[in-house]
Length: 156
Ligand SMILES: [Zn+2]
Image (cartoon, rainbow, N blue to C red; front, top):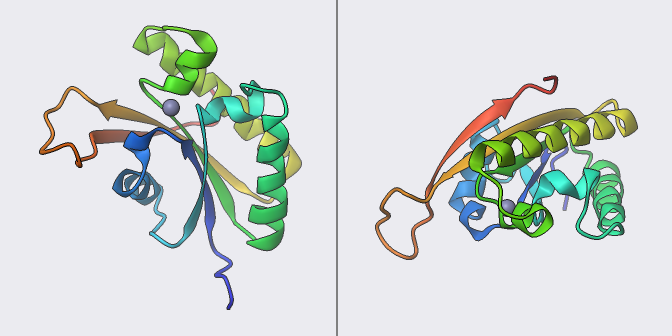
């Protein structure tokens, strides 16, 4: 068996609303097809690198990125995403208004991207913010909510 070498690491929140077709929708937004990415999930992925829930979680992230994504799978890049209404952010930072939450998450995503680029300059790093539209009616309990994805420039 030979793994394709042109794959991406997609870092998304473990939030169930972002799994399955929504994870593929996020990947597709960045031009990545199903089967071209591997997913890493965490409770508020923007915190995983900059301000993890427990300090040693950071070691898990870097081990996975280095040992699996870079060395074993030869990924060409990493897409880091955060999202609105994030339970992981709430655990860490308490209740925030949506604008403050988004601003803090984007700042963490940018810091994380900078750190990844410093360690692995050859990797392409892109960041995105996903807005979850929980307010829109869905067809049934099995339906995932609609999402809107935006790419965030690496520099403010
Ligand atoms: Zn989340």
